[in-house]
Image (cartoon, rainbow, N blue to C red; front, side, top):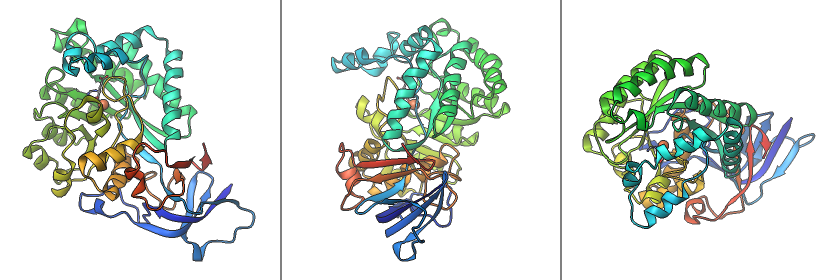
Length: 411
Ligand code: NIG
Ligand code: FE
């Protein structure tokens, strides 16, 4: 099946020569072709270029994109989409003055979600989660990473990962699974950290690896959660079973997690709301992608990742949603891109690069996703008619998406 998009006002993120990630300096530019065509064959991008060299249109399914922009679908490299129920009460508690930390210390937060997940059947969790996945696909997301971490027991972590596996099998969207058993200490291990870490290392990781349920391993490296040493120990065990580290660090405190993550060659370090000069230094010349989650900063009213400082230091940066019931009940990458521009002073070019090609890198998908390149997945956003791509972050909150194409098909 071939589909030809014609008269595209501007085709964004065009990479004839594939790149795996972009440095801070490279992110300043977003290569585009004005008045372009794009040919889709089955699920892949087969050709593209200026309209002057557009192939003959006979026998092709034609889509006229007159006045519209086309860009690669968003690559959301950090989510917790699989969960049970919601935490609206905690949201109201925060409005009334409690902090995220105080709520967690009272047994709310992650432990609240773990309790709800435990009480909900796998089938019901799947049904709730698939609605969120469908929602983000309609918002232009074409690849997504999903974490476990609301199980916190062998059985419930596996339950979450099996739901992720089922989503992978049933939807035309690339999904990468991350095992996040080290998300919080369950109440019964509150004073026995060693016991829970032994459970993660001796039982959870082998079970996850045995069923081949995850590509990545994560930990919440933070004061009151997992220390740098505990995180390192868990990452080492994961790596022995073939899991690649991708770590929550520097959300509330800078405790040295970034240096440790770089040492174990983590694919990404995520959150980074609080950054020391040493943290920036540690990331230089590494393969680790820093990932900012501006919707989390927005929702919790905590600092935004100092993107300008990091980009000016030459570091690459990816943007993701962090979609989860506690700190970010939103999976809207359009909002993430707009917020990165408005609150983090990223330019539209930088933000779009961060939400496409660098996002793909942060989940190991840059060979197949994140740019308009021949042979990559035909995962595309077709915008409504707009004057310039600056409108995407500028008109924040407006829905400027006309059509989403995933793996060659309109959704
Ligand atoms: O990325 N920071 C740790 N984990 C999640 C939030 C978890 C929750 O509150 O449910 C995050 O923000
Ligand atoms: Fe997260």
